[in-house]
Length: 339
Ligand code: SAM
Ligand code: DTB
Ligand code: SF4
Image 1 (tube, helix red, strand yellow):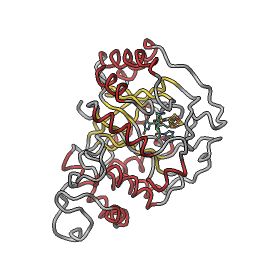
Image 2 (tube, helix red, strand yellow):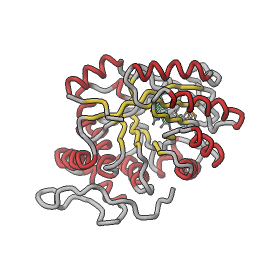
Image 3 (cartoon, rainbow, N blue to C red):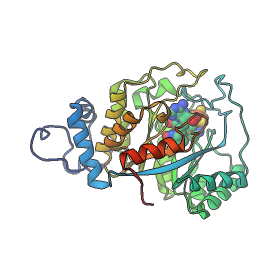
Image 4 (cartoon, protein in one colour):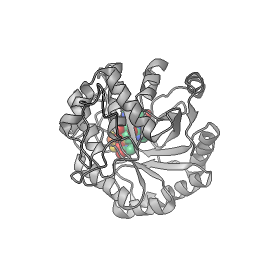
């Protein structure tokens, strides 16, 4: 994934009026970090207007995509990501498991589909898959796809061969996050570099899969770091098709277990800036909804979020009950995104 070639310009916001002086890159230009930071500084109403305009230029604002997650291999991970319950470096009380059987995964995929999910995302607590696991992973992709679901996996770093094998099996999306800004990255993870992650993303692209790439908010980073993370994502060529914005789920025993959440309006601003920078991408209101009010989630949808995880578990932490999501969608007139 090259970071220095020109990216697509953002959507065309109104050319005149009070927003005429607000930041946007010129035709064919990349967003500068200063422009991204300036978006964060906009008055809230102007920011949401810009985000709504971008959102409506590319999507039906009343449609939200729904994915369901399953942890197919939990805990015991060799990496030291400071936010993660599954790292073997921290005492979180989580019990490590082996890779699930294909039949058990399939059962969960069928239930996810019956519960309204359009995409099934399988996550493994690995630094990278071992070649001996590839046959089982390929079998899972084929089986889940045969149920009529879109498929996504997040397994850590991939080689060219592994990426090619997963794409060949029909894997639609690969999730691999940058997690935070280049400047803050080293404060959160020391066992692999941001460059390692970008190389895997490059391999995923080269193999023909769609990229799901985003990060986490609320790890003690500054607004400049949040801008830096979105700047990195938006200047990928092309930007990721799917951009998960996770609110940290603090886990006792991890270095970030006592982090203070970002103020709710700052979280909404982060979603809005992501939407403006990447108007053609699906922006996912990802981890953290369990700790959000309906009103905050509604503001996130207004700011341009158009994807969520459904089902009462994420990987190891909780998520709102299906009934609560159904009630919120009914209240807001939101429909599942057409597949
Ligand atoms: N092991 C693989 C990897 O890290 O690439 C895949 C699974 S990992 C759990 C996927 C992503 O989930 C992480 O990159 C991170 O952005 C997010 N994540 C993990 N723990 C989280 C937490 N406690 N709160 C919010 N997001 C989290
Ligand atoms: C992503 O960005 N968020 C999801 C998915 N990719 C794999 C994971 C969220 C994990 C939240 C913490 C947990 O449940 O362990
Ligand atoms: Fe391992 Fe992924 Fe957790 Fe990092 S985020 S410790 S790589 S499971």
